[in-house]
Length: 175
Image (cartoon, rainbow, N blue to C red; front, side, top):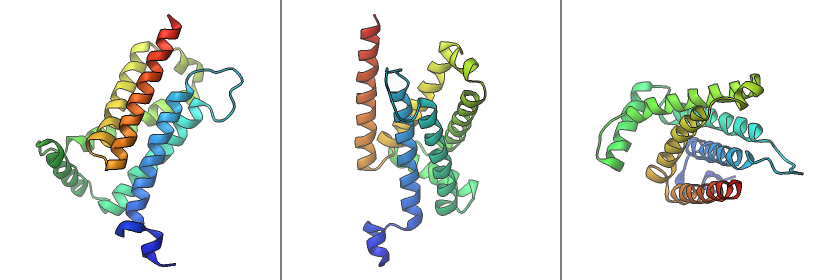
């Protein structure tokens, strides 16, 4: 098979792996949030299942990006992050890379907590949920809307508007 047909638009296999794993990660995150509502007679993966799938896809994305894009070099990743941030915001900083490290660790810790101590995880204080999800939502917004491709921007805005509307509807019905 011709490589041009396998990977259209002149993208390499590494670039497709990076984008595909990013998309799957975002989809897992969104589906986990949407699955948190306990619907009667609901079938399919649980919220924790989608959460774990999204995490695995994110870790795959992280490794693909470091392998294919940065050659396993933190310095190259930091420089690329600074350049991309400078183009998008005018601030030439690589701080976003450290936020990505924190994002990965926070998601990994939360998923481990959810699977290893489900009862404890479910009864944690609300401020912990709010802090985690605010940080993750900010990171996803930046990844899709601020730094994403045009399709990523559409997906990011759709998720923000869709989940925002859905959560507002849920709160309104609860009152």
